[in-house]
Length: 453
Image (cartoon, rainbow, N blue to C red; front, side, top):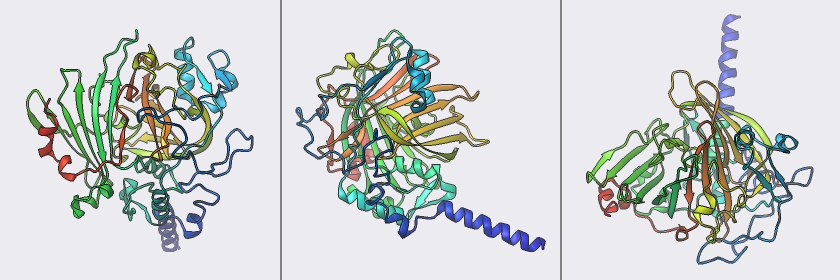
């Protein structure tokens, strides 16, 4: 009898494990593009009619461009209402704990302007096809810290997720426009609002878009990232190179830094997990970049469910080339008179630090836009369980390229009253999507040339 019970327990555990790790059935995958969008969101609107149905997203000619920069397809719209510290209790069921903390920390200046909801997300058809292949084939391996049988295109690993880890993998593997070059700035304002801009040139390239990448090297490669500091002068010429893998436990992230002052290339193992972010004045960790990046293995991930929230969306005004950085960067938080919020459905996931592991954040809570699998809100808790930092990513659709992406990210330290904003590009040249990347440019040997001032 004991043997029978033991055998039953083993079989039950095996079935449970396979249900967590296995790809979805063909019947489930057939929902993509039917009751679900091709990326796995609910195609229908909500019962109240405040979230419309998804009908394909913005067209590539949704609005004219301004010297390559986006303009606002919804420029004539006005806020339906404005949430302030005085009326926040009316809307708290559609706000995160982090947003409520921001109202408490900045009761006089923090506001949320709520506009009509537009489901603008769209990606190229080949990416939709890749997502469906992923749904049928991709599996979690190594306790969920890596993925196998991923499609050659490497996008949207689990468009029909079964657990929190699969949701975070969707964020990590989402479509970002293929190879991209950007000129962006970062700022860490003091409590009085003063700041110094750090200018970056960064490039990201993907294995499927690098024709000269060795096939063996490409098997476990997720992306290649290079970032050069161009200002201020004391930092100019420093270059960071990162090789990210699909399974970072099996093959950890590789990183190198070229220091212009020393004229040396060095390995940079600190560019992972809670290592300090580049020129961030201690205001973010490495894995805060892109709201969350890197290996997920130090946390237990829980899928809480789906809810409706007011999130930064269609952020064309705050991204406008007519707006200067000084108009955006204010004391305490970015200029909320330029920020746009809409009601959208999000996935809520919670990550708790595993016993015996180390990270300055003991708990993280993420809210992931259902249409794009992009983390749009985050809450980061310290070892005492106290809410420490609140993240907001201001989403928009690069309609001319069919790319959902951030205008910029902001991470607020509600204890110190400071914040970091990274990714601003209002006064920079337009991003270059789809450029031809060479594997030769993403090697340690190439760093010295990249760092020439």
